[in-house]
Figure (cartoon, each protein chain N blue to C red):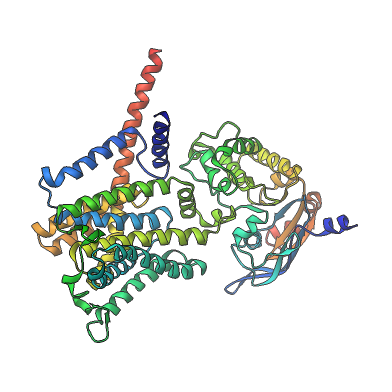
Length: 371
Length: 244
């Protein structure tokens, strides 16, 4: 019993550290409250899963860019490229393998693995050539746009088909009705998650929490320290004997895996992949906006930024006109850059941190004087 | 016999090194050598190529031509991290400490490759004594004075016990007391056997170190000698005044 408690405390210790905001009990109590609210939201608060499922998927993509840009200082304007590769991979394999397997295990695994492999390839070239800063940002955007351009001209079913899947040009992957839902299990015992239903919501929410906690452990490990060290000063880090190129390549691959996971989930969610939506300029820029507005240097802030901005965007597009919504998003970005350049949620987090620490400080002072 | 031969091999040597940035020649046919255990100062007016030389030695810049040796081994094509692993340590001109982290946490990155977290407190304790920061491991770095931050930066550079330490302006922006302390830190590190090469502008500081001094001018070696010889050299004074 004592041992179990010790282990739990150690695990809790691994989740906390200087690289992630929120260390104290206040934060974790707040975290549990938010999680609980999130779990009961569809049944008790009337939140519609088909609306919010999209926001949850955005959370993975935001975590991906926060890791890469916020923690390691590598801005990629083409993070959606990996999202798109993941999405297409899931769709193509899903269409072809559904009849034989009846599940999407391989499609989902490949939707994560293929973007990671591609990142390993392109990352090796970029980082071993010691490419830096704006060059990586632009190269990644161009790469994503190349994918978009290529996919847009794949309408000819005679040429552009992979097994039963037709790439379909601007219409996206076809036959869309054959893109499977997320399904796990063997033979008859299959759990299927329809992207518009509550099951998908619970599954993705749980997965997001697991990924979030795992990334917290990663970021507060010595690897996390190295990421921040590389962000702050790559040359200095290298003079301590670290091969900075390998660290950059490592985080680039992890970020690609996360983006690929997001892409796979998104394809499963709407049974659709559209080249403009996954590889286009706005797909790429939106990720940068979520993460900048939320706060790129903190995982929690970046994920919250994505979810809340997506929510706001949906609310604006359904109540106003879409053009109006885009302008508001741009205005928010400019406003946040001016007022809280580190990001809204980091700003709020630091403010709350000060509030609680000063309260705790005052309490302990009181205790001191009582003694 | 062989010991005599080995000790004659310079620990760091540049042989006919050139470095061009576009049309500007920053290092012009520079051949310099440093002996094991030496404390050596590099001085020279702005643009003399001092910091560029350090970048070439550390590998963050590559020479246009020429070779660089460490302990007799050609390291011209080695990456900076490989040179660090071979025993080269550096403190660049800017401070390079993590302002938001504690003094102890600042040592985490340099020490992590060699030590387990449980061993670190003892190692850090020993390092802090050597850089006059004993007892400050819990302090957040931004609360330290400018001089203390410089020492911390030196401390991070010696965390891996380099055989050769390059220090670019270790006393920049310090008052007289801190400058004297910095000289003391450097002398005691050198007394412990570390080869140290220092770039500095502050003549009081160099007088304090009282070591072999090389003067660089327009990317080449202008002259070399003891501090007193350099101080009394009319030509050196002239190049600082722009008459060279």
